[in-house]
Image (cartoon, rainbow, N blue to C red; front, side):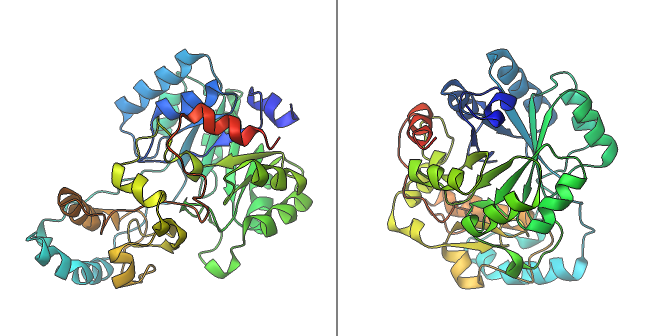
Length: 345
C-alpha cells in the first residue's frame, strides 16, 4: 500500500474520476467498496440533491472524494450569443424549435461559500477541484476540516502553481483524458501534452504526490504510470459502462463501438474544451467553435437540440464524453473493473 493510499484511506491508490452527468453516489460507493477512492461530481447538483448524496456517502463509512469546478463565471457577451444562435438556427428549424425561447442559466457553478457551508456538515475526507483552486479563504476553510485537497494540472506550470497555492496532491491530466480539460493558466491547447510526457515532468518538478490521469484503462497502463513516478492513478472512461454508472444506452453503445476510436476536444457543448466521441454537430460545425459562448454558457442553447434529438433516438447533439482509450469499456460491476485495474499495482 502506497503512502498516497494511506492518506486517502484506501487499500490501493486508485481514484475513480468524477464524471458529471453519467454517475451518482452508486458508482462512487462501488469503487470505494472495492478498495479505490470513489468520487462524487458536484458542479451540477442542486443544494438538496448534493446534501442527499453526501449523506449517502458519509453513511457508507468509506473514504470518498467530492469534486467541484473553480471557473470564474463569464460575463455574457451579446454579440457572441447572437453568433452562436445563428450557427444553431438551422438545427432549431430542423426540429421545429423556437430559438428565441432558449433558456438561460449557467448549468454549472463554481465552488462557493454556500457550497462550503453545506459541506461543513460532512467535512469530506477528500476534495478535488478542476480549473484551479477556490479562493484562498474557501480553500483554508476546506483544509481546516482536515480534508485532503487534490486539483488537476495540464502543464508543469499549472502543477507548480497548485503546489504553491496549497494543494496536497496533483492530478496530472494528460491530453488523452475524457471530459473537460482542467487547464486554468492558459487557453492555448498547443501547451497540452499526452499523459506519459506530462507525468514525469510534473513528478520531477513538484514535491507533492502526483496522480496520473488520461488514457489509462487497464492494469498495464497503471503499471506504466507507476513506473514513471506516479503516486496513484485516476481512471474515468473505463468506468463509463459500469453497471452502477448512469451512462445512457446510446452513450454506452458508442463507447463499445468503433466510434470511440475517434474522439476530439470540443467547445460546442459547454464552451470549454472537453473530449468526446465525434458526432454530427461536431463534424458539421467543427469541434472547436469561436462562436460558442464562454464556459458554461454554451450549454443553454445546445440543451433543447440535445433533448429533441435524443427523443428521436439520436445522439447528434449529445456530448458523448470519452477519453482516447475506451478499449476497456465493458458492462461489468464497478468492483470488477476496479479489481482488474488494481492488478497493475
